[in-house]
Length: 141
Ligand SMILES: [Zn+2]
Ligand SMILES: [Zn+2]
Image 1: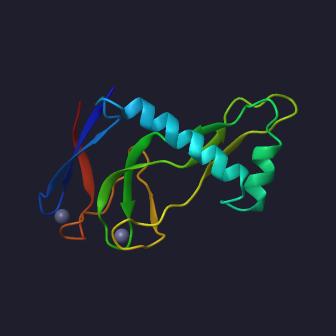
Image 2: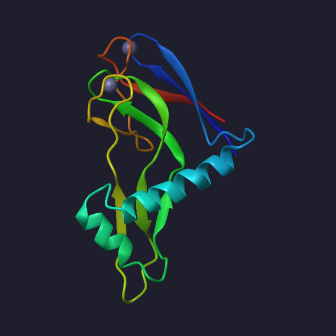
Protein backbone atom coordinates (compact mmCIF):
# COMPACT_ATOMS: atom_id res chain seq x y z
CA UNK A 1 0.00 0.00 0.00
CA UNK A 2 1.50 3.26 -1.01
CA UNK A 3 0.83 6.50 0.76
CA UNK A 4 1.15 9.97 -0.70
CA UNK A 5 1.89 12.86 1.60
CA UNK A 6 1.81 16.45 0.45
CA UNK A 7 3.58 19.04 2.55
CA UNK A 8 3.27 22.81 2.18
CA UNK A 9 5.35 25.50 3.80
CA UNK A 10 3.25 27.84 5.92
CA UNK A 11 5.57 30.75 5.07
CA UNK A 12 6.55 30.60 1.41
CA UNK A 13 4.02 28.13 0.04
CA UNK A 14 6.63 25.68 -1.24
CA UNK A 15 5.09 22.25 -1.77
CA UNK A 16 6.48 18.78 -2.04
CA UNK A 17 4.79 15.41 -2.41
CA UNK A 18 6.34 12.22 -1.12
CA UNK A 19 5.27 8.64 -1.63
CA UNK A 20 6.04 5.90 0.88
CA UNK A 21 5.32 2.19 0.73
CA UNK A 22 5.54 2.05 -3.04
CA UNK A 23 3.36 -0.74 -4.36
CA UNK A 24 5.52 -1.06 -7.45
CA UNK A 25 6.81 -4.45 -8.54
CA UNK A 26 9.66 -5.69 -6.44
CA UNK A 27 9.09 -3.37 -3.49
CA UNK A 28 8.18 -6.19 -1.13
CA UNK A 29 11.10 -8.37 -2.25
CA UNK A 30 13.49 -5.46 -1.95
CA UNK A 31 12.27 -4.78 1.59
CA UNK A 32 12.78 -8.41 2.57
CA UNK A 33 16.26 -8.42 1.12
CA UNK A 34 17.22 -5.21 2.95
CA UNK A 35 15.87 -6.63 6.20
CA UNK A 36 17.86 -9.82 5.74
CA UNK A 37 20.99 -7.76 5.05
CA UNK A 38 20.37 -5.58 8.10
CA UNK A 39 20.13 -8.68 10.26
CA UNK A 40 23.29 -10.23 8.80
CA UNK A 41 25.25 -6.99 9.07
CA UNK A 42 24.15 -6.57 12.68
CA UNK A 43 25.23 -10.13 13.48
CA UNK A 44 28.59 -9.45 11.84
CA UNK A 45 29.11 -6.43 14.06
CA UNK A 46 28.78 -3.73 11.43
CA UNK A 47 26.72 -1.59 13.81
CA UNK A 48 28.84 -2.11 16.87
CA UNK A 49 29.50 -4.69 19.55
CA UNK A 50 26.42 -3.89 21.60
CA UNK A 51 23.95 -4.43 18.75
CA UNK A 52 25.85 -7.55 17.77
CA UNK A 53 25.40 -8.97 21.26
CA UNK A 54 21.71 -8.09 21.24
CA UNK A 55 21.24 -9.75 17.85
CA UNK A 56 23.11 -12.87 18.93
CA UNK A 57 21.07 -13.16 22.12
CA UNK A 58 17.86 -13.22 20.09
CA UNK A 59 17.55 -17.01 20.05
CA UNK A 60 13.76 -16.90 19.79
CA UNK A 61 13.86 -14.55 16.79
CA UNK A 62 11.76 -11.95 18.51
CA UNK A 63 13.59 -9.06 16.96
CA UNK A 64 12.17 -7.46 13.87
CA UNK A 65 14.60 -5.88 11.43
CA UNK A 66 12.57 -3.08 9.92
CA UNK A 67 13.60 -1.58 6.57
CA UNK A 68 10.26 -0.11 5.61
CA UNK A 69 10.42 3.37 4.17
CA UNK A 70 9.51 6.67 5.75
CA UNK A 71 9.96 10.40 5.33
CA UNK A 72 13.38 11.63 6.45
CA UNK A 73 14.86 15.09 6.69
CA UNK A 74 18.43 16.26 6.95
CA UNK A 75 18.75 19.07 9.47
CA UNK A 76 21.84 20.39 7.71
CA UNK A 77 20.85 20.63 4.03
CA UNK A 78 17.12 20.36 4.92
CA UNK A 79 16.36 18.08 2.03
CA UNK A 80 13.25 15.96 2.63
CA UNK A 81 13.11 12.54 1.03
CA UNK A 82 11.74 9.05 1.38
CA UNK A 83 14.37 6.71 2.75
CA UNK A 84 14.63 3.23 4.19
CA UNK A 85 14.59 2.76 7.92
CA UNK A 86 17.28 0.76 9.63
CA UNK A 87 15.45 -0.14 12.77
CA UNK A 88 15.69 -3.05 15.18
CA UNK A 89 12.61 -3.49 17.27
CA UNK A 90 11.08 -5.87 19.74
CA UNK A 91 7.71 -4.49 20.66
CA UNK A 92 6.33 -7.64 22.20
CA UNK A 93 9.06 -8.92 24.46
CA UNK A 94 8.67 -12.24 26.24
CA UNK A 95 9.71 -12.66 29.83
CA UNK A 96 13.33 -13.37 28.96
CA UNK A 97 13.60 -10.61 26.39
CA UNK A 98 13.17 -6.89 26.69
CA UNK A 99 11.49 -4.12 24.77
CA UNK A 100 13.75 -2.58 22.20
CA UNK A 101 13.44 0.08 19.56
CA UNK A 102 16.70 1.17 17.99
CA UNK A 103 17.17 3.31 14.93
CA UNK A 104 20.59 2.89 13.39
CA UNK A 105 21.67 6.29 12.13
CA UNK A 106 22.03 7.07 8.47
CA UNK A 107 24.15 9.72 6.91
CA UNK A 108 22.41 12.19 4.64
CA UNK A 109 22.82 10.90 1.05
CA UNK A 110 23.00 14.49 -0.19
CA UNK A 111 25.47 16.21 2.13
CA UNK A 112 26.81 13.42 4.36
CA UNK A 113 25.55 14.99 7.57
CA UNK A 114 24.59 12.66 10.39
CA UNK A 115 21.70 14.92 11.38
CA UNK A 116 19.53 12.90 9.06
CA UNK A 117 16.52 11.43 10.75
CA UNK A 118 12.99 10.28 10.35
CA UNK A 119 10.22 12.86 10.35
CA UNK A 120 7.90 11.44 12.97
CA UNK A 121 4.17 11.65 12.28
CA UNK A 122 2.67 15.05 13.06
CA UNK A 123 6.03 16.74 13.43
CA UNK A 124 6.67 19.66 11.10
CA UNK A 125 9.82 19.53 9.04
CA UNK A 126 11.67 22.77 8.28
CA UNK A 127 11.00 24.14 4.81
CA UNK A 128 13.86 23.19 2.44
CA UNK A 129 13.07 26.22 0.28
CA UNK A 130 12.97 29.20 2.65
CA UNK A 131 14.55 27.44 5.67
CA UNK A 132 12.30 29.52 7.85
CA UNK A 133 8.76 28.20 7.77
CA UNK A 134 7.63 24.77 8.79
CA UNK A 135 6.02 22.25 6.49
CA UNK A 136 2.48 21.14 7.18
CA UNK A 137 0.76 18.10 5.79
CA UNK A 138 -1.95 19.43 3.48
CA UNK A 139 -3.03 16.17 1.93
CA UNK A 140 -2.62 12.48 2.64
CA UNK A 141 -3.91 9.76 0.41
ZN1 LIG B 1 21.98 16.75 4.10
ZN1 LIG C 1 9.18 27.92 3.01
